[in-house]
Amino acid sequence: MTGEALVRVDGVHKHFPVPVSFLSREKPVVHALNGVSLEIARGEAFCVVGESGCGKTTLGRAIMGLIGPTRGSISYDDTRIDALPEDKMLAFRRRMQMVFQNPYASLNPRMTVRRTLEEPLRFHRPDMTDGEVRDHVESVMRSVGMDLAWGSRYPHEFSGGQRQRISIARALMVDPEFIVADEPVSALDVSVQAQVLNLLMTVRKERGLTYLFITHDLSVVEHFGTQVAVMYLGVVCEIAPTADLFAAPRHPYTRLLLSAIPKLDRKTFEAVRIPGELPSPLDPPPGCVFHTRCPHATDLCRRERPELRSLAGRSVACHHAEEIGAG
Amino acid sequence: MSAVRAALQSNFVYRFLGDPVAMVSAGVLLLFVLGAALAPWIAPQNPYDPLQIDIMDSEIPPVWQAEGEARFVFGTDAQGRDMLSTILYGTGISLTIGVFAVLLQGLIGVTIGLISGYYGGRVDGFFMRLADIQLSFSTLMVAIIVLAVFQAAFGVGLYEELAIIMLILVIGIAEWPQYARTVRANVLAEKEKEYVDAARVIGLSRLRIMFRHILPNTLSPILVISTVQVANAIVAEAALSFLGLGMPVTKPSLGSLIRAGFEFIFSGTWWITIIPSIVLIVLILAINLLGDWLRDVLNPRLYKET
Image (cartoon, rainbow over all chains, first blue to last red; front, side):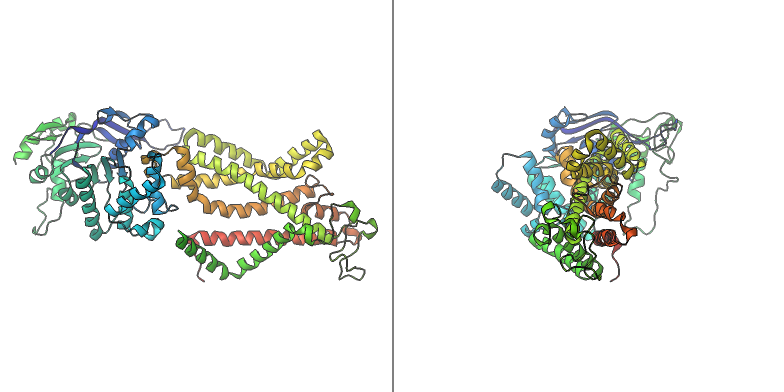
């Protein structure tokens, strides 16, 4: 289903300094990303799942160039884009766009919808005449199901779902080929979530878009994704085609996540009960980051960090993936 | 757009009409502004024109006093100038200094606040420490030193010519930290919002994000402190004039009028000081009350039960 890799993330680390008194000797850092590597092929709807604080939003923001990685590289269409000067980055800004999580904060409250939508066009396409800009804005507005009368109104007049449509329209305005969607439906009512997801799927089909879809909602992944990456504490645990992952999870953490989905036909939770809390990203455990909660952990896991390795058409970062998957 | 603006305005107007204090304040302020602006046409006398002044008319009490004359409603000062005319012109000078000093403060303070808040780090540290240092000198102290040095260095003649500009510069420069701090605090809150990220993802330059996206969202607090700052600037100018470092007696502001009359207050000619003082107090009160009302209207969290 895919072509060559459009986005390649290679060994990316991101550490955030924790604000401390400037006299303090220690300089603690939050390890938001700990060596993340993945490839997103053209045309894919690549989903990243994980619980809060696992670094999935940081990953999306690093790819968009909103934050620079501490280590590692990010390439887009075989060009390194991390640490690219802003003027060279502009060419890529037209090709990649982002839809944000909170539709109540992602639109400038002092700008009309039309001005919000026109801004990226006027910036990237100064050659377009006023009439062309208007036509383009209107055609995109129609394609995301917006009423043309919305243009002259301000964001506070719209509901969350409507605003998310406006956000999507803004992202589509420069005809990008790649969109990072950072939990675009998690702030919406369940009834509206489906509409927005369907809209995202429709525009993907119409425009041949590639998505990086960040979410914590596995049912959304199942509905939406072609590939899934599961993240835990700044590390990718498992990358697999969606159907394979849901049919046979290999990583113990993936199994934990899947078992946590409530199902109607299940009377009890015969859950893989996993004890413990998420360790602090200030001080991630040595070896496999999941060993503190993993029922299969051995000395090897406590000592050595497992790398992502190919196994039956997917990648898993677990020393014991073979035994677990078979079980 | 027009529909939204109309709605906004109507809410604004509605709140205004529901608040008698705001209406009275606005009315008083409007009266002063109009009186000052139209002074050359409505004032009975031009106090700057020596030909219209007769020293024989000096120290005539207001019209309601026994010795008052109908020509001089509020009486005359020690040089025979009509108090009403002088107050009208003086209010104009006070308001001009207040407004332009605040514009200057705003220009400096908003720019520094935006840069400080948006860039953060060392830039922020530098400007905020600068603001701390500036605030540790009181405005009046800075103004007194600067103006006194200027007077001594360039002579009183030149000083009297440039007094308005000097006062605007001194008061404007001395008070920028008020704006810088308010704007910075707002920028720090705004820049974390996702619409700023969205603008960055589009690739807009920092300047454009700062001035086109963040600044419009920090305007309401700027508007509110501006009213208070205009009042403060007028008071500062009055205080400086009272100390003899403000407007010269030949071109009096409200402050220099109060000072000019102060010398005569114990000889019974109270009106030269008291009347301009009342005008000053009412003017400041009106501006401050209007500022309070504006703050309540622009800050929805402070909606009162009405």
